Length: 509
Image (cartoon, rainbow, N blue to C red; front, top):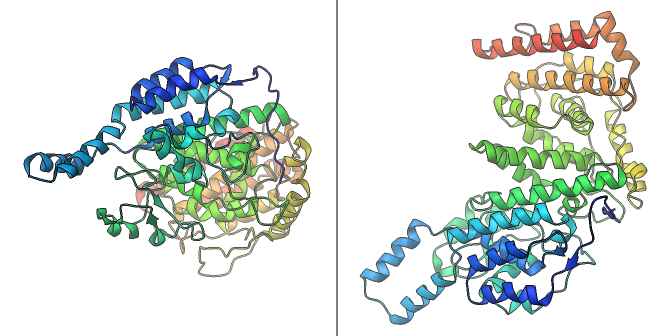
């Protein structure tokens, strides 16, 4: 599938390759294991005029990801000092420790990586990152990748990874010098993990444990990646008037059938929802940013939108009510986000199976009794997938922009009357989805009245004749959820009801 790339973006100057002299300045420091000095030199020579040398970027990433010395390592060092041992073993351990980057070097590497992301074009930095797409501009592997220094040899594993989600995953880089790899044919099969060497170091028991989608040392690298993708989608919007990141698309496996949209986004979604479950607000914000990037990508025909909904809906529905509300509030207020929210809420409330011809999946959530479905939703989803396959060969503005499945005011009113989801989770989640459905669909209609998108005439009629107010009153009335709620939850439901009614009254003006 041919993908458009942002070219000749206004305000950007052409970048040249670093000279051999400048490369050698950095390489000399790395060869002498002077990591902090090498990072300092990279910061000094950083410029909008020069593309960063890909092996140097990978070495920065490797150092940034390198785990800090754990307490066990310190105890081992103490044991070697206090207990007699073979001189060769002590020498080997000291040599290994002397080659390992320090915590200070790792912090400096993360800082300079972010500076490069903000200084240079996304495409020049992406050459150093693994992806599922072969970039014709990628510099072939050279001696700088394999021979110059210990860090250069170790950083080659970043080039050999399939995607950036692999390099930030727990266990990708370990202090014992091995890398924990997963079978390419069994994604997410945590029990099939293996590592390349050091099998006698006592790690076998950990192979059966779930691996974190983001290692403790990788949050700074994830922030750099997200900034890179956000800059890329901004450049693309200036070029083709559609906001999405081709570099993010390259991190999703291509479909087997030619000219069909990509669909396998489990790994980035794993990162999103792992981040959303963190205690740190900063880490949760990274999950929101990645989700927003995926939503923007879903606004194009290059990503299978029905499959995106099928993958995201059960994960979103599995969030606690407080986390779901925070996610909806944190996402940017854009047309693409509002469209996604509308279809996500319809999907979560049971109004659409959102199946895809490309690769159908059964809905994970079971229901106590069959429910009415909003008509024509599945047909719309199939039509969208078909539209994507015909447009994939020409990713210009007119063909990449998605035509979303049809949604009407009648559908919104019908979804508001559906029973709660008490068979699959708290009824409070149904309240949240219904409230977000009305708010997001209303936002789309407001934008349509201002010339963005197609307006639904029945929306204005439902506002004027009170049909929407009645539907909201009924859906949020006390006891309407069919589930006994405590006083706090009931108060929250009434708060959302009052907010929606106030919003409707403004729209009626």
